[in-house]
Length: 313
Length: 280
Image (cartoon, rainbow over all chains, first blue to last red; front, side, top):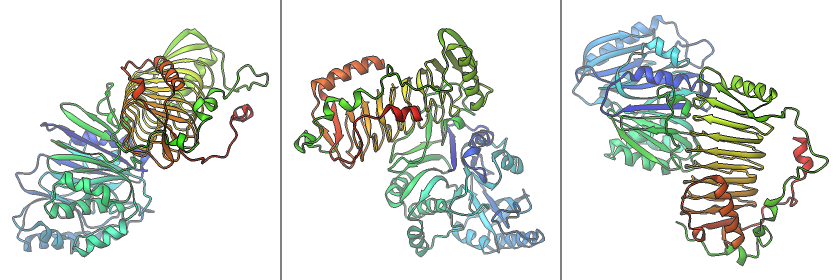
């Protein structure tokens, strides 16, 4: 059991970081192991925002690889060098935790090439690379992660998030959601459920050159959608295809620079409650999450089996 | 809509007896001398009315408060600001007028035996799960597993419901004014479901017994579910029940589709023994 939530404001930027924190904190009982946010902000002068980590010294007892933090600085220097040799320019550099960084870069080349260069540095993983997406995930509940990464005042149009109860893989950052749809900027996915044909799909996608950073089945959805988008398929059409191609029980949310979508499997086995008004759309595994940002009585409903919906910011 | 063969169950020689409604008519006789007694049941006065503001209360404290008030004889309790919290109003084992001013989260009004509950908002998954008796009316929509495993009583949703409504249902009646999702009546064993709108795929999948009435379209039938003849007795029952449900909708009763089990999947006696209920 995991909790997922999303909110999108139509034509308006607001404190989406604070809203997502409240929604996810109310879903803590569905997944206490880790929390992740994919927030879509107002950008940095059309430059790319790169969120990455060079290690995972998160918590004793987790399945993360524990290392001496002294190796991190060396890795960051290697990342800086890779960025430079790839032809990108580093404009801003922020260290958020001992292992996690936020960079602002400008780059005109192929994102896949840049991503491969950066991830060639040992234990380094790009969490997101986009012009408005900022993907943050760590061990702990929504408030712990929001405080750690200073998200409570994050301004933007939309966001999705996840509270994770680890079932298929370890308690670590790489198994936490959301997943970035590597190598497409600004595409992220959160998922509640289990995929039963994970390995078949993963092998097929790896043969096509797609990369997986974890053994978490949810990552498959992001990579699957990335592969479809890479082949020119529209997001909504790719989502509809996923209902037939992915086996198992699942509800997932996907977000792009200006859209938020949801898909529910043919069995409707995983929950999703939806509220839509002229101004915003809010979705969550439980209505109690929506009520944290809309405390008044509202009309909500459960989307039906096999439903795919996409909204514009 | 799937192509459904007319009166397939009759052609198969099934359900002659069930179609009279025999198995739904009598579960429990309250006049029986060996009548059971619930330890936590209270004698209440419906004229004694009070309110609970649930705004800053956790569900366990809301339920404790309901129990304390019933023990003091309050027979009409209004819950204000329920805030879609989970498991509110569970385990009420006596008659009570419970009025919820707002929406409930998951597992609301579960395992109840006797109260009349009115919910002005929406309910989440598994509303009234395992209800034994009473009446629950939801004014707006409901999530999945609406009325899962209910044994008796009337469960009414004036809006639409999610998937698997009436799953594992063992008696009672579910009435839905709007649409219903996939696997409605999945593994239903007794009772009746009425959906006045459209129904999703796999309706009545692995249906043991009981009857499902659908006013709108059916996307597809599940394994072993078949269409049966709608009788005058059925129409009379539907008219009476829908009137009681307070659903204000124009209905062409002759266009209602009746779905029953097309295969004997069960191996149990006709009537549920009262001893079984007493032992719970």
